[in-house]
Length: 130
Image (cartoon, rainbow, N blue to C red; front, top):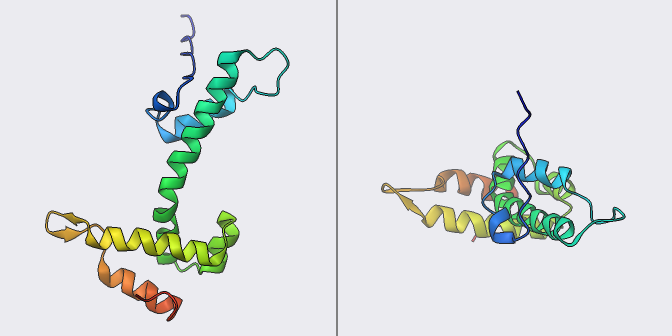
């Protein structure tokens, strides 16, 4: 049995976005060659496309993960340290995400429980409550 041939990595962002987010990280790891002598045009473009897709994908998931951390009892300082963001930015990203999710209707219910959001707002203090 011959080993499966690895597909060539994408050299365009739009193609890299189609890859499963966890596989995307592995592919980036496998194709990180930009500083390797002899790297060709497609090697460097693949690393650039994979990197851009990783940043895009994980950045869009960050507010959901911030919410999960808040729900689990973490405070904004803990989250700021975990993300490298300023505390105000953590709260701003979560607030913007929570505003959208509480207004998003899925089968007659919001995407996230408004009571849960208010409980987190209450715990965070008056600077967060709308």
